[in-house]
Amino acid sequence: MIHSVNEGKRTGKRAVFNWSGGKDSSLALFHVLNEKEFEIATLMTTVNAKYNRISMHGVRKELLYAQGEAIGIPIKEILLPESPSMSEYDNTMKEVLSELKNDRVTHSIFGDIFLEDLRKYREDRLKEVGLKAHFPLWKKDTTQLIHEFIDLGFKTVVVCVKSDVLSEDFTGRVIDNDFLKDLPKGVDPCGENGEFHTFVFDGPIFKHPIAYSLGEKVFKEYEAPKDKNDTCFSSTPTRKLSGFHFCDLLPVS
Image 1 (cartoon, one colour):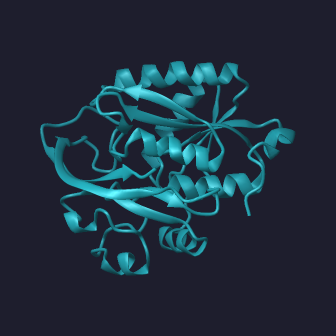
Image 2 (image 1 turned 120 degrees about the vertical axis):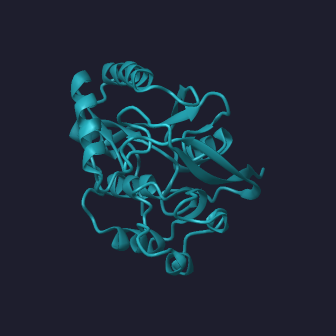
């Protein structure tokens, strides 16, 4: 059972939670709220300003705000261009994090599990503005994590997959034991290498489920980053294209 989101006030640790809307974010938030070490000031999400959708995941902004309402923590939306340069991304985040620090935030919390380069990038950028990083799921076994996620009663739907590792058929599926059995060999069960992204619509951190229906499926290609493990945070992209299958989710009132 989740306790009040503000119970961490007595520790003096006020944090922003980096929220993607997916399973790793949800499980990390579950642990943070139960441990009561932090007061969560806001759920911070980057949004594609052109399409009004969660960056990379492609989920409509309406569903993002429905998550915030169901969880009971306000959403802080950060608008970014469709393909921001690293300098654009870094400058925007530095400005936002500096504002949060002025609002007594001391920590930034992430759902990352094992990508060392990404962790170092986050820690280095936070250090520039005087904040600390916290990784509740760090170095935990991803097979155990996904089974913990399912056993806790979380429900999540796959909204995006990398086309070179998973077919379009995986989009729109709810992650359960059958889904895990169908994953090809070499695909991380938590999608930690960017193989797939999800939208969580129910679970122990939610006051009520979020209603949605499946919409159109589309294929898109983007310039691939130089580092195969990095979806948006490192060096200059090459000319190689990476393909992604997306499944649109439609809000249901």
